[in-house]
Length: 67
Length: 299
Image 1: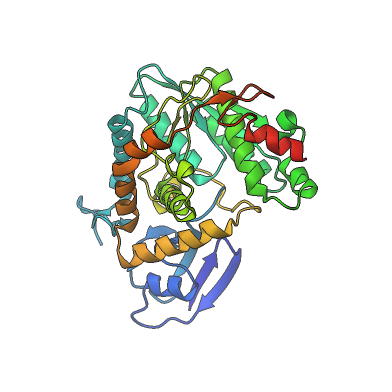
Image 2: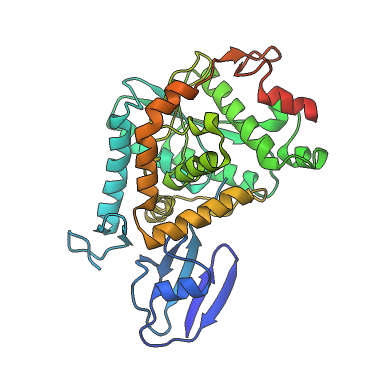
């Protein structure tokens, strides 16, 4: 299981792990893309085409903020 | 993915093909800002630079990078913050401005809508339900930033507009046919009037996403929420369109900026209007009375 925390929405989600899943796939399923979010994987800023491992924790940080 | 130095990369710049680790990314950000400043002579020797700092990621990243540069080059900084009076949002970000300025040793000045105009933005929103909050906020904030920067003796006013902000604005003004605004998103400043402090945008070529990464990498405490009044529908549509295009063609934003920069000298020359002084408040304006005074009469 992958734990995903969405900073903007202040929500936590659990996503079923499957082999070959990349960070960008998770972003897409949550309505984000590599243009609109930065991802921390297990506390470290990560590139979107990295493969996810089971029990990973992702933090989704929205790019659009401020104003 | 690995950086050219062999360390694990934290960013893949799709538009250039670069993969960078934390250290190389940081270095590259400072270099790129320095390059823009040099290319357009945005900062001169002994300048006092007023930096418009809201507490959001862009302005704090700008302040952090300018602080680094000011340790090597002869210019000074002062942070200028406008408190629009947005309860639950701006009060939080102002605390972050004060905290960061204190730890970086930068003087910080805060000016409020309430003190200057008699109303907080929250009060304005309650009084006028026709015009959008952004219509008031944008005009009042620009007015106050310019006035206060001038009173503080600033030579330039630096603002944290990033690549995304710039290309959205360019496209919005073009699509709306607003040509006088279309001619105001330039790379370099034009001294229009002695009462206008030239505005500079050193982050103009930095994608918004890289501002976020820079803030995270450097542990800069920033406000990651969005203004409760944000939601200019037209800008949101343009942003979505540009992000979609960038995903499909990863140089779209830079291409748009470069195209604009090529025609900017012609636009600036032909679309710049004569500047007069508001007969009400004396601040520079294009019309008889300035937009700020006009809006204040509405309230």
